[in-house]
Image (cartoon, rainbow, N blue to C red; front, side, top):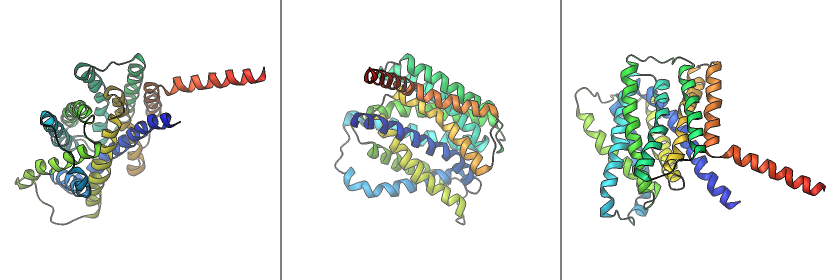
Length: 312
């Protein structure tokens, strides 16, 4: 039972992290309506950084090995710096729904990179789940039109693809670092470096600083800093300490589904039949990749065998 719980905890952590990341597209769109994207990103990093100050006494006991310093630089440069930079550009040109659909390419990128750089082996079960989940996500993307305006969707989707490349580098790098450093510590490093990265953008003349603090965008920034940056990244980094990077990447295909669900609730968008089919296929792919159907079938057959033996 204890081993089952230890196996289930990373899975639940990943699902919650994907939900929070899916909600981030909507939160950023809401914040971008009143504040410049660079202001939003700086505020997001600042909120998370201030929250991490409570853990500073614990972090002082951690020492970074000299041979790992370049990995920390790569980690922070890929996420949050370049990833959030490209994602901010993407959401200026495309809709939240379309941007979230581009994330379906990330599992494939991570799986390929994990085989090449981490030496991980991909099972037929994982590949089957990956193909099924990506197919479901594609159905979600073509099953309905985004309701939010996208002035230059091709350009915006290209920026989001660049963000996915950064996320791939981040995942491979964080997989190595979580073997030696706590997930919470790595998440804090990302937030603190993110503040210094986005701060210079506030000095640019084309980036107007807010003259008033509006409730909706301010609430979105706080949510992005605490729930998305702090909690989601911690959950993702924690899960990577207990799961292969290629296997965990399948959960990223849940992001478009959660984004569409939240869009329906918040923006009153409706689902088409094709989107419902895609959502079911997407969830099925995640379950297949984790072997839940296989284990359920084994449990059912074992239960029948035991009951038949008891009857005899």
